[in-house]
Length: 289
Image (cartoon, rainbow, N blue to C red):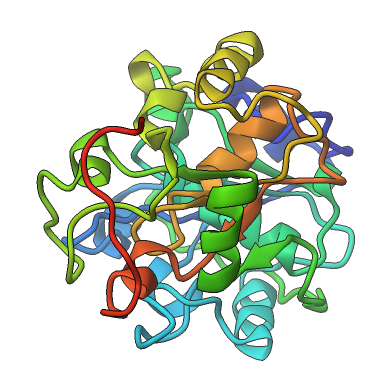
């Protein structure tokens, strides 16, 4: 598969590439918070050649003070990607079976690991879109030739809690969680309910339309602009519950044309799971002023 012009790829384009001489690597990252695990679904049926990668154990380190899904150790991530067949010149396409936000974490991690922007994408519409298009699936185990990719961390900007607090005052800090969690009306996972003071809410679910397909670039741009993240020169970062789904905001801003791949939105990886665990950190509730 040749170099990509956008962070999303259509099912028809992926299928055509899978039958060509330069096959992309397909990562199946199906995941549900609280389970059940995605591997049995992968084993029951997947895109031919796709390799299952587990969010909790392979795309993140063990949970702790840094949050529920800290960045994986580079050596571990390199081992995972090589097992999946990723080479230095591979094109890699990730998919999940939800709204694309888990696949966006894989996309973001690959970029963070040093893969160029034109060789990493998310499958638009994900697994559901693939099935809806009537494209082939298999239950045969995938046995990729081991890859030779080298993980070079630092390819995507990250911030910590102190930097997130400062950015909420001086720039734009986006919260990717559902509105009820942002407003503090409920908190099913983390120690405290609410949001980082000054953060603005752009729920990940609002980036996709029916069938899990991503919204058009101009519609996405309007969603970001409504949260004050429209100007291309604005300093912007994103967070969510544990640093996973906020990666979709990074992808969405790039698709919208608001941020070039050379200047992406920064990610607060620890996110609310890190912030809310520190009793010294202030918490805001209610809608943004």
